[in-house]
Length: 168
Length: 154
View 1 (cartoon, one colour):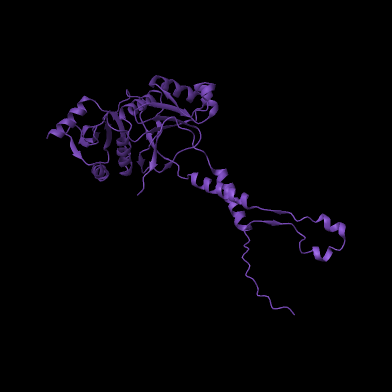
View 2 (cartoon, chains in turn brown, blue):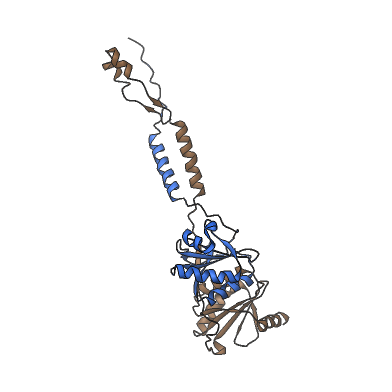
């Protein structure tokens, strides 16, 4: 396998009359097998360790300061709250909160924004929740093509709203 | 006249083209391989449908691991030497406190204004520290940043 023969093996009969010339014609045979073996080993190694998939990123824009407040009509404000166990609640303005499944969120947001194009979505996640919930909820918001969206801190009022919705 | 020799079937295969191709592939994979830099902490990323690819250069990464510890890192070694000291320039990430993070973010942005901020959180990281990180970013006027996620299948 993969052996290299030096040239002149076949010519040696035709030209090999003189003795001093015959002496110089050493047959060089390099056995390439170990090299090829190693090459294949390395090839396999690099093929297996290479990864082509780069992580994706999700772009997020936040207002620079908490002080810069924008006045929004209550009826245009949709608040989505995620409790620490991952349950999702929504309400418009100061209405009581309602439970919703994470899976239904996309369709729900689509319908809501169609109903009211001026709607602003505010996402609040409980501090003891998981980071994954933020990404999931933001992903749903992005998939529903809701552009007017912001993140806010959850306060005691929000927690009380969640408790109330759970109680009912 | 000698007997007609039965022609022996040659089973010597010319391996040269195969070896050539193998070598070519080997070279390709060796050139394109980038070894994953040693991470200070193991992160399992959440998945999303976000379509943007992660940038490779001019990045600074704020990592939040499973238990809510915050790590900070930049990609350029020279900047790392400047921020963390010469001894730590080979470490891609350093654990920081929220106050240190605030200072480091400002320093890094002064040294290289083109830096893109990436927030890399573990799937199961508590949201509290992540929220703190987001607030710090807001305070140091980094209003545009990226959350690193894995691409969700389907």
